[in-house]
Structures are given as C-alpha cells and as structure tokens.
Image 1: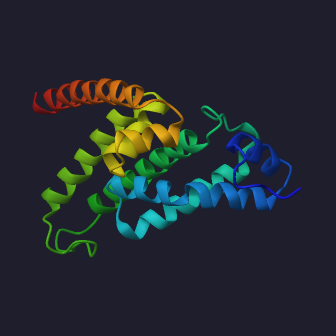
Image 2: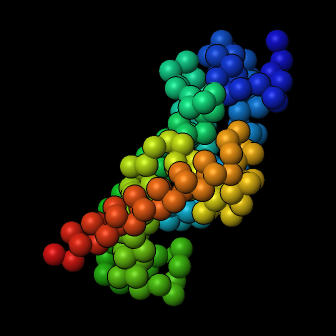
Length: 190
C-alpha cells in the first residue's frame, strides 16, 4: 500500500517498520528541511549538517518500529535525534581541534580565531541543551516561531492549536529558556 502524504507520521512509521520505502520517503520529504535547518542552527559546520541530517533519517529508518510520536508527528523525535547527533559531531570537532598542532587552522572559517570558534561552539551547545530541556511540543514551537520565523497563526495552523495556545506556550518556553541560559552562564562565570 502506497503512503499518502496526508497520513500521520505514526501510520507512516508503522509502514516503514514493515519495509515500506514509499512511507519512509514521505516522512523524509515531510521533515528533511526542518531537520536540516535545525542541525544548521546548532552550530555544526555546514559540511557536517548534511551528514547529520542523513544520519538522523538512517537512524529513523532503522528504529521506525520504536519511534514514539507526539500527537502523531515524528518531528520531535527527529529533532531530539538531530540534536544528539549534532552534539556528537560538535564533541568530535572539539576533540579534533584540541589535537591540532598550534600552527594549523580550521578551514571552515579562516577568519575566526580559535577562541571565537570555541566560544561559538560552547554557546551553541548551551542554547541547544536549554532547548532540549523543553517539552517536545515546546521545542517544536521554538523551532517554528523562532528558527523558521512563523507567525503565531502559522504555527497554530501547523500544530492544529489556537493562536492563544501558541502565544502562551511560547511565552512560557521563552521564560524557561531565559532562566536556563542565565543559570548556565552563571555557572560558566563562576
């Protein structure tokens, strides 16, 4: 049975678990741009964004039967997996940079100093960790409204909720992020 684009991700994942490649292609097409942009926002190098995005969907294909959806959507699971794989790439890059000889330079951004790159990577990790502590629904709202620039109305339509729900949840998510980031920066400063 061919997958229909309007099917919920949950039904598509069940089909993927049974070997339906068309269902997997539907999930991939539905979410690849969002996962790609999210990976890019996490501070990994542009050359690694494509690899991380591909890895997310390879893992999704392998674990389709065990993926838990949120309100029928696989996006929260994909985003958490993307975040985890991105962190792994950032840790690997940091380790690689630490092992570089003093005279070698990173070709990703030749104008940035090592300190600047390290601070940027640390800031990206801190922000991503703070977002990762939000509920999957709030992570999705942050992504839709803050990363993708959707209006409350557009996000409400995409999620099937009211504008007021988006406004309230996003306000609460922003407050949680501010509090979490303040705490992280206080810890780093001490």
